[in-house]
Length: 195
Image (cartoon, rainbow, N blue to C red; front, side):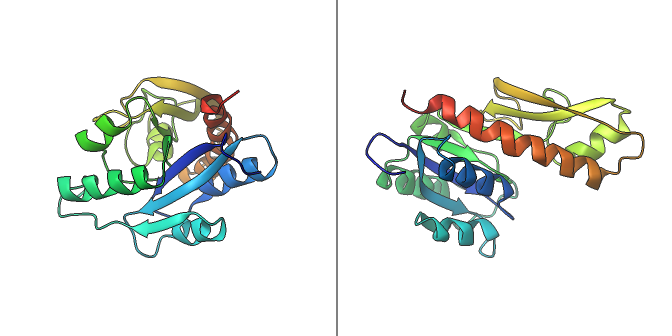
């Protein structure tokens, strides 16, 4: 599927790219009228960059800067410039392990979304499946939300529940949450696409 009416996506990720692959599948199946325009990572060896090249997207590893968990202002301005050059309309954080700052938020107000492996506001930040197990939750899941300057604090767009089983480990629970993410994220992205 191609054409001028497709929603142009910019995807930011730090790792393996399973949610990115789910977005690509939804596009290939014709249920998501979008095009991946840019794939950016803060990790030079991230598989998401390789996946981005296979779909013809512009791919770049951005220099992460010195502040752990954050991008320095110059790096963030570079990121914004790339997204604008590629005419990105919606920015998706798919396993991007950095906090977004004011430059990107100002460039894409209410056009940056993130998928998180918990039912926010519960279990923000890293290791959400382990947090759910430690809390004794019977139900967890995933959330797609707008990104703000906090850690998983933006307005919730949609959620999908996942049952916590008695024999779950953090790994088995995370695997089932990922299955839910792979369905939820493309369906939310589709709501931003043109009718």
